[in-house]
Every structure is written in C-alpha cells, then in structure tokens.
Amino acid sequence: EKMHNLSNSWKLRWTSALGTFALAFGVLVAIVLSPVKADHNTGSDTDIENEFEGDAEAIEYGRLLFARRCAYCHGGGGAGAKGPSLTKGKFKYSRKGLTSELFSIIVGGIPNTQMGAFGRTIDGDETLKIIAYIRQETAKRAAAEAKQAEAE
Image 1 (cartoon, rainbow, N blue to C red):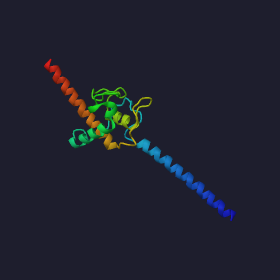
Image 2 (cartoon, rainbow, N blue to C red):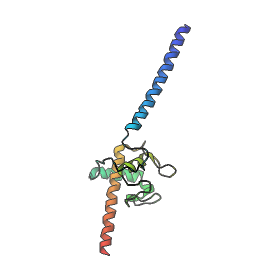
Image 3 (spheres, rainbow, N blue to C red):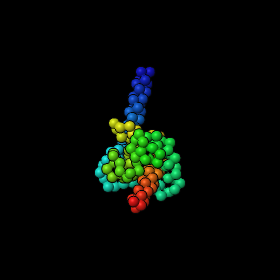
Image 4 (tube, one colour):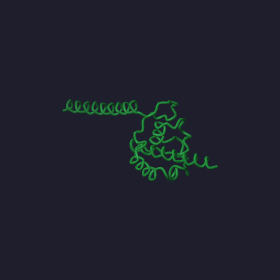
C-alpha cells in the first residue's frame, strides 16, 4: 500500500514539473517568435507590414475601435486631449513612428505613464486597424495643413 502511494506521489510530482516546464517553454517560444519586441524604442529601421493601410473597411473598423478604446485620452480623430495627439506624425515614445513601435506601445503600454497595455483586450489585427486609422488621420491633417499654408 505504501509503495503504491509513493508511486502515485512521484507521478503527481513528475506531471506537475512537466506541466510547469511545458508552460515556461511555451512562454519562451512565444517571446522569441514574437514579431514585435517589447522594447518599442529599438532604433531599428525594420518594420512590420500593416496589411490594413489603405483598406477602407479595415480603417473604418479601426476608427470605431479608436472611438471606443482610445478617444477618451487621445481625443476624437487622435488630435489629442488628456493624452498626446497621434496625428502629428511624431510620437514621444517612438523614435521613428514605425508600425512595429506603435504596435508595441498599444499592446504593452508605456511604463510609468497613463498609457496602459491593451494587448489582452485588443487583438493583433485590431491593433493594426487602429494604426491604419491613425495613419489616415495623420495624412488628412498633413494635407489640411499644407493646403492652409498654400492659401497664406
């Protein structure tokens, strides 16, 4: 009887250790294979492609997501409010304004600021659609400013 209990105890410990190892290995693989690094200020010129830029339907969905999730802090159209403007083409916490940097900021947030992480509530495609919308609004703002400068 004691031998049987020891055998079951050993099996339970082994199964638990194996499960912990599998979980840790899975997390490590996910981090290594992630297309976007957690540090959004890498200084790298490489970027991820945003398949949704120029896609009117995706941009409209991005606008709706932005209105629901981002506009409270960043204002309507990303023009700025409590949080900074996102349509000036320059970002305080992104060296180059790359899609990969913006993606990382939206997903992971910015430590020690009010910019929270949305990676658990907005999926990758939704994040890219929001970025496509921000890019469109940035282009609209630049065109309006250029037109105004021409008129002066």
